[in-house]
Amino acid sequence: MTLFKTSVALSSIVLGLSGLAEAEVAAPSQVDQAFEKLTAINTMREGLAATLDGRRDPITEETFKQVCMPAGKALKEWATKAGYEARQVAMKNRNPSNALTVADEPVFAKFAADFRLRRFEQVVASGGRSGVQLYARIPVVAACLHCHGSEVARPEFIKEKYKADKAFGFKVGDLRGLYSVFIPKKQ
Ligand code: HEC
Image (cartoon, rainbow, N blue to C red):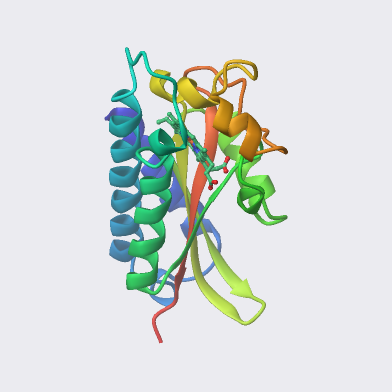
């Protein structure tokens, strides 16, 4: 809890230092609410993954439909409804469309270097877009290793379907990826 509060405070400082008055960007409460939603989606995924613990049947594509697919779906549905743009991004990605963009790269490095960092936001004011880009950490917990553990231990359907898969070899506590949400400035 203390760590959580510290990282929120730190990210607020970063936002403050960016030189734009808070009034010019999305209301802080909107960003806070978005972060809460991301935390809830992440908790949901961890809960779903934990249901696979102790399972004897092999993990199939059907099983996947009960873990990372609902998390991705919940993220997109919430963002569409709110008028935001949301992605999951990772350096070691499984779905090629979840690769880091050039803008994500330094942010990912920041999260990789500081394991207390749960959240980070920055003002976007370029390319005809203005608003806040919010990032939230996706950590690896034990249940993720059913599908993101060692390369050889990956379920068959993953080996077959994701030929360019990089999302394996993780350990508990590793940085798995980031939720990335663009919150446009209110007109
Ligand atoms: C049942 C297998 C399974 C489990 C368990 C699982 N994942 Fe995944 N995960 C997948 C598959 C398959 C994908 C690719 C989804 C797609 O095609 O978009 C994926 C994609 C992801 C992505 C999107 C980024 C990327 O690499 O494409 C993240 C982030 C992620 N998983 C995190 C987690 C976390 C965190 C856990 C544990 C809480 C977890 N996963 C548990 C199968 C799993």
